[in-house]
Picture 1 (spheres, rainbow, N blue to C red):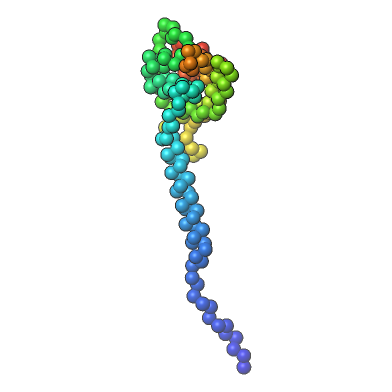
Picture 2 (picture 1 turned 30 degrees about the vertical axis):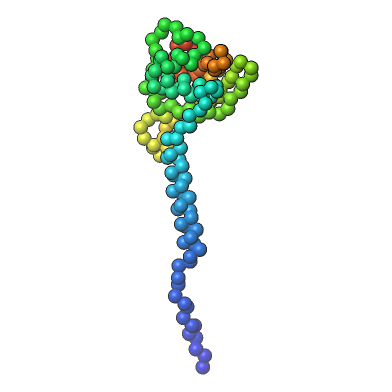
Length: 161
């Protein structure tokens, strides 16, 4: 007489490998979120004797609405005009792309990212980016801004179209 009964299966234990993989994935997600959230908060101060450093200082002065400070970085004296300051500048982020220096002239290429709207919405924050450039000239061993993207015009710089 054959017994059709099969031996009982051992109790099911959770697969430790799967648990370890899930923990690693969760840790990577947390690290990625921290990097994304902190990325905008860290601002490296560039050497003010370089074209990149001058662009950084000039741009900060423009964003802060400090016409006098911005004028110190211009190759021409600001002409009489009503200083233009736009609240939109509070929502602008510059990212340095590269710099080309040729003798007494330098081109600092940047990505200008403008955020708009209050919320994220379904597809993230409302923002757009454009590539643009600052042109600089060297005068008395100092780099000075001679041309800017339109967002950073201080009445003295020539705006690049």
